[in-house]
Image (tube, rainbow over all chains, first blue to last red; front, side, top):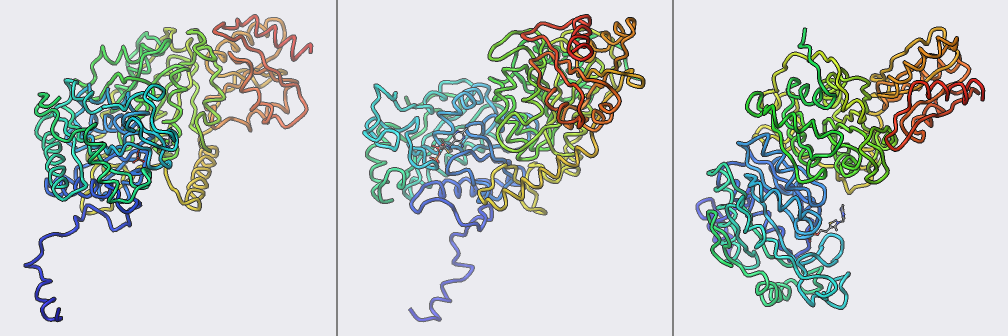
Length: 263
Length: 360
Ligand SMILES: Cc1ncc(C[n+]2csc(CCOP(=O)(O)OP(=O)(O)O)c2C)c(N)n1
């Protein structure tokens, strides 16, 4: 391509996409192929589009996304493992007009933080929870998570998860959907452009709900991959996720405006 | 002049919190301190001052709610008793690391384990040595009356915000449950959101375009920077030592013997001293008001004057170790204390002084 032609194309009128200023320029600490980066980006895009970033306080968990505050350009607090919903409760109760969200992995939200998750949901804390379920403990090197599938190998289930010994994967999302304090529950993915668009719409809806209604928790699960922890290539991990994770954790809305829509 | 009331220590904490303009209380019931949250729920300060009161699902959740609120510059507090305070240790360590101000009340009961619901002072080590993981300290205040329960709420928050550190009010089941006269402070209004944003530029109140984002965290994976952070914390503790030591002396001027005691044991020691003086035994009392920072120099000074020191604590002897580190000369330092929720009488305390220090 000739140089003149290129510079003709690269101009402001032809701009169709730009990085949101709500993502910092820090280099993401995630493995190539991991879904966390995309989940971060669409969350920040939503806050930018809604124009609420100046009034937003986010909470990073313990897990791979412990450093979310390095990447998300809003005021952030870093919580102890599993305690993000308690921090969010403390913040939102004191600043009811602020936008508050947590961003948590499955170990954080569905194992060590189960009590905090269930009770924040049950009290109907007016926050958004973004729950990235990759079926494994990514940060600590691939141990079994509460959402590790039956038969799935991890460093602490090296022969596959034996449900008779290790229990069944916890469908915490279906569980919290049952609670009256929860306004909306949805399960999404971010591994294809189509899914990214849908997930972003779902996150947007969750934040819109928080802004519109003064009560009720809005819960977005993102089923994601962990190619490093699953010991697969990024491409293979996404295929494996579609074939194995989605049947167990089906995508779609589970609760809308306080009504269960899909069981 | 404030209002004169007759109250339990636990109620005084709650009433003082409302009057001190505290923004939020998060707690979980446990004997012998449940009156704190019961009083707050009955008073409904959320309808008057706007103070948030919430019963959490656990002490773990409660301290982390405090963390969240404190991270936004609000005056947040919690209270519990020994087993519950153990559960809060992770959160306290995080708050020390993230340099967040808060007040934590421990109305101590006997342990270990579920122990008993009766008064004890056996959580001294946990309170003054750190309690949770990592190199940190809290400022620890030891009230010896219902009045001080009330006064130390305001004092606690002043210190917490001055140094950006958790402050513990280390009380016990006796001070928490007993009723006394107390003069309640006047109402101080809660800080407005605008005041908070101006006063505490570190608080996560939402990032305006005019500043960088604020981050509340105790994490730094870079060891060099983490060491610098630790050095910074240690400097802060040194400053606290230089500025904040508080203690009270009782009949020390002519004393041949010294009791060192805090909280309820200090009250008992005072009576023991009076009994002793009737028999011609000249004892005095040094009462630490701050347990961390510890009044080591005052003890060092008095150790040169007296013939021996008895540490009186409702425990197997914990503060006595810090007294021994403070005396710096060759005098007798012993401990006496009942355990498991039994409270020593003044006569027992005096007998212990006679047996272990004077006669021993
Ligand atoms: C109290 C406590 N226990 C254990 C750990 C160690 N730890 C750090 S991250 C983690 C698991 C995180 O897994 P998950 O929440 O699924 O997030 P991911 O890393 O997969 O994104 C564990 C067990 C810790 N930091 N704190």
